[in-house]
Amino acid sequence: AILVRKQEEAAQEVSELLAAEKAALDLLAAKSRSSAESESKKRLLEERVALIDEVLAIARTRAMSLSPSENEQMIERFVRSHASELTDDCQLILNARDLSSISDDFSKRIARISVGIRISDRPGDFEAGCILRCGPIEYNGTVDAIIYEHLDEIRDLINRHLFS
Image (tube, rainbow, N blue to C red; front, side):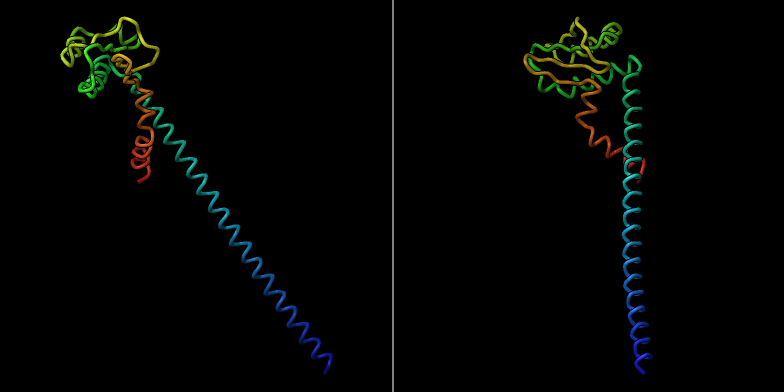
């Protein structure tokens, strides 16, 4: 009778140990799954960010290589957007490439926005866009400055278009 009872106790103890080990293994498996899912989501997010950065770089490259007339239109829109803030003495600074290729029509359109704007003879050190200097105030309309200023909005827009 004692032997049977000891066998039953041992069997019960083994059963309890097995149940505890199974619970520990189940918990470990759940943690592993959760960790793997978290790592997968992290990698997916990294890939999305990389893709958004790639699209942003392509958009920047396109903005840098606009045709002369498209570039003039972009600069004119920028100047018009600040027309109400302009003083009588403003310089429109263009880069060397744009300065050498501006049309007479562009110069006239800029002059019609505000009589105090003159196109600077000295080029700015930037790739595309313009800088509008009115006394001590500068309005930075370079492509890089505009992208930087609206970076979060641009990233959100690209994200919605690519992943929604």
